[in-house]
Image 1 (cartoon, one colour):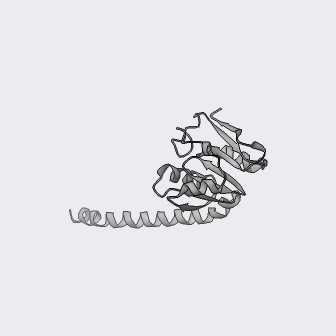
Image 2 (cartoon, one colour):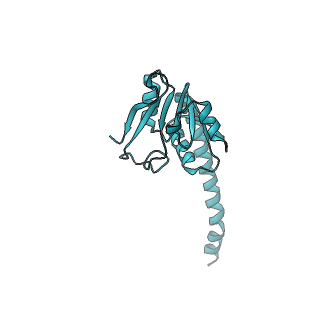
Image 3 (tube, rainbow, N blue to C red):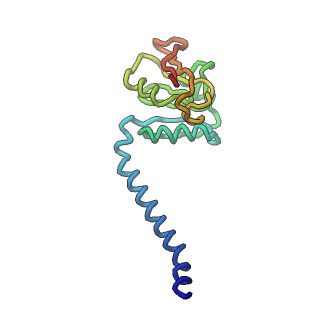
Amino acid sequence: MKPIKTLLAFTPAAALTFGLASFGWAGMAHADDHGAMSHHGTMHVTKSPTCGCCGAWVGLARQEGYDIKVTDTADLTSVKLDADIPGNMWACHTATVHGYVVEGHVPFEALAKLLDERPDITGIAVPGMPSGSPGMGNDPTARYDVIAFGGDAGDGEVFYQAGL
């Protein structure tokens, strides 16, 4: 019986040691991948500190390869006004990347299209918080429009249709 007690006594310590070692390996893999992650450039996201769906969108953006800088604020209205986002296109968070404004739960396919095509617009928006959009359930079949605004887009035109 004594060998079993000894084994049981060391099992938690061994599990903890293995867990910490695994955590370290994951951190090293992340550090190695960081150079590849910045190929999209740095995105600055301004959001409410208490918004879980915005945090989910930021996490997905990081998975897509964006280097993210987050600013939490209770005054999102000023951010949206300063970015010249039309009031009917407001959503819960505002991002900027490569000189464009990205408002709300924009799918990353639309963001890639924006950065590839580089149209003469201020930005793109997913007004409101559509169910199934990134950070709001992540359903690739969810249908909603991504609207371009400013510049050649004027007050807004459909830039991308999600779920089609």
